[in-house]
Length: 367
Image 1 (cartoon, rainbow, N blue to C red):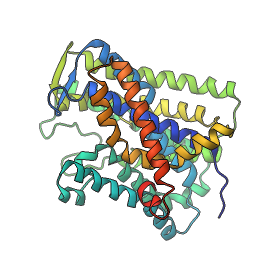
Image 2: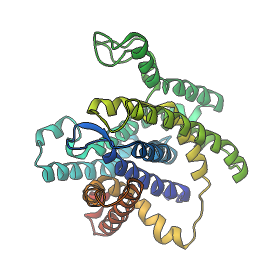
Image 3: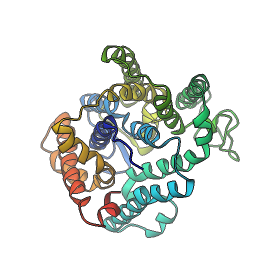
């Protein structure tokens, strides 16, 4: 069945792919130091630049989730055919690259039976998106019939769950860490039940529903109207992310040196399913939805890179780590982040676009 290509999704994939690499290029400036398992920020300036990158680029993974939903949900094909196509497109390249990361690091092959390999931490994205694919056929009959008001209320309930990371922090500040675990439990969660009252309307499923909302009910607004809604969302999201993240990094002065767990807590305000990221993602999607340009640059640059973007995501750490290690001693923080992201993007794009042209093998490498 022929489906007309949706140009703005190509622009979105290219932008989101670059943003992923920008985030990963900033991470060495707060994760690492002399040991890989510590939180280390050398200066206030570094903390500020890291925060700027996070505020601009943190929407990357949610944008990918929305794009998948916009394109695939509700599912039009029989479930068996849908799963077969998704596995060939997503699952086989994931397994191949996961094996490559383990092999390059001489890691434990047994761990691949249980989770993505430690050597390829960015691969967490693939099991997440696979979970959404599993949900899509199940929810498609409802998605076909759902009305605008009902879906909007569902999304509002989901937005409430994006406050949970902050609620857990508030619990800790008010009452200290709970005696039965390091993470405070909320509304029915406990050591023997990880599925609280809001579990089934939380997480990346919310971005899937946002994609559905725009697909079914999103009007083609003018640029002026789009920006009048999107810019406040982007600014509000950036303010929430920036205040929370920079505040956490700067709380104890500089240079900051803590254990790795401190970085995890510091990222509470920029978790992908937190309020600031959710608001900024909606605003970013509204703007990118206006990118329907189909000129020569789109045909010869944006479209091929978009088609190879999944492969780029899978392989980019092979390029990014060496670039970062080469640039970091010789460049200022913002220049190093920009150069690492740009070079990693260009290298992975060149390899992935070329790999996709290999007869038969291309789809197993890049999807």
